Length: 182
Image (cartoon, rainbow, N blue to C red):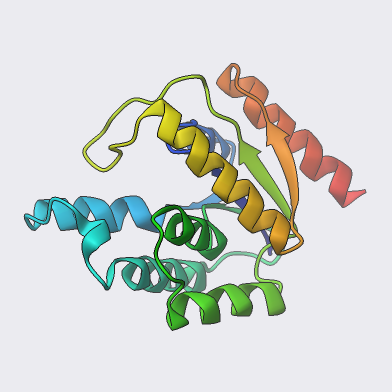
């Protein structure tokens, strides 16, 4: 199976892109960090990023989700973020990379878990706050740069998916995949 990562700033529209890819018949895997944050909030923890286990909980959930994908070998799977994104998050928060995070990033790179082409969903010029997303647009731009740097440092090729109508964004992804298959 072919596994692609979608990444970008919080609120860039990754989830909407994933939904349309899913409707078009692709397998999609949800983001782990948002779910870890939402669960922490539901349990009454207002600032989960201050929990020493925060990053490792994300890594663990990402790994379980990545390993749970069971589909035909010919399928294309899209992941909403990867452990490289968790590395970017750790750096953005000023946290040292935990051993679990370093091991997982090393594993996915060494094993070639994801294609080296990563779709970078560009910001839309604003961020809508949600229960789990509490970041300003300005902060999201800084976070966006951390993501770009983390992927580039590890040798991934970023394909820009510019802001615009949802169908156009998905068309960029599909056209890129079609070209890669030739």
